Length: 159
Image (cartoon, rainbow, N blue to C red):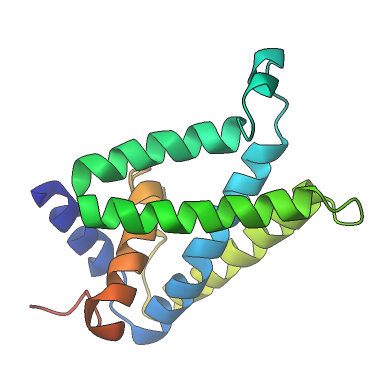
């Protein structure tokens, strides 16, 4: 869909530097994982317990997947696979009594944001998320497209 192409190109415009791209390819998925981990920890209404894995993280993922599905079927499938892996990781950490999921998620979020800021400092640009919240949903697609397209070819370069 044209919106997806336009948005990923706009996102890519702020990520021209190769080091910034590499940092984002690593830390956007980790930031996504951390946000989902934090959402997983938010208390839910009692009726959520009637459905396995129903919590604020999975509700948010469902909304995100609907958004991605409206944008591009192949990318939505890729995001579904990534989401399933992330939810599996989060559930494993949550089931380990020796590892506090909220603490791990907050720590991972701070590290992820920090390294993305470093990438933007190297590039000399500001964080794109400050400009528009839609990039919270576009950044993971941009990373996925970067990984799928020609084994990680720079999406920001002119086609």
